[in-house]
Image (cartoon, rainbow, N blue to C red):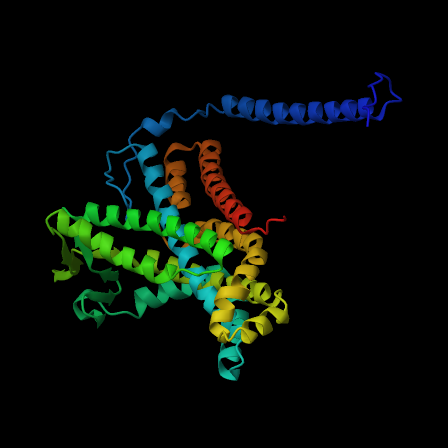
Length: 387
């Protein structure tokens, strides 16, 4: 079909469309310019400094938990980095645990066992109808007020201690720790390659490959080889009571533990509903097809139903994961030093509110967009390809 030439007149709908869009764009630019200029004039009239030069000044406040070294003499930029890493830690752990727990509960809601079905339903209705802030306050109070002091700490498993100072767990230390992670990384890469090759083989020949057992062997053998080849300098360091608190090991403070528990239990209820609806979206004929092939209900769910249900669940899970990340900002209510808490402290010292809010907005925007891009990539990989 031959393209119609553009007639630069009001009667051409394309020209009118361009004019309308140009007018709207000009209005938006004018509104933004007015708001920015008015804000800058007001700040200037009140002798309030603007800009981000303050980030290179000494912070001068302590941070209770940090994944990297931090001292009082470090800069505000370093403090913000600490808060961002703390937020990422909570988000990562929360997404993993809430997905696992939510998947189990979602499957439980469809169980033919009356007790399992009812318990899963009660969990979902109870958890998602209680505000997240109440969850956090409840678990924080439980961990700080109802657990004993370190000297009387509970130890359900050897090396793990529960007290009102938090949860202490053993940690691996030694020169071979790096090689352990190198082995894990190689195992992950090889697992991906084997999974792709197994799918191609199945499409061509119909033969299946025991990917799970091969991957399990890689995850056991390769890290052990890395440790042995590097001299086996690896030791499990258990927490030990010294004075009024524990030393060594890795600790979950009451604030971090309460935040993760609250976020996971709350978000898992929404994940469970997504999993339930995704499984129910797959026709009953797929279950019958699995039974006709002699597969058990569990194998039918894992091999036939779940791969199809995941395609329905991914968009909703993306929103849920982003909500979990943004909900982690409620950590400020129980004193966990996330990005919001640290920037609020910075704001109270510098008085630069606009820059502080922009830093928080940029941090959560970046994390949320990263999650959205990753889930969109995964969704594209899982999408059905028409031939």
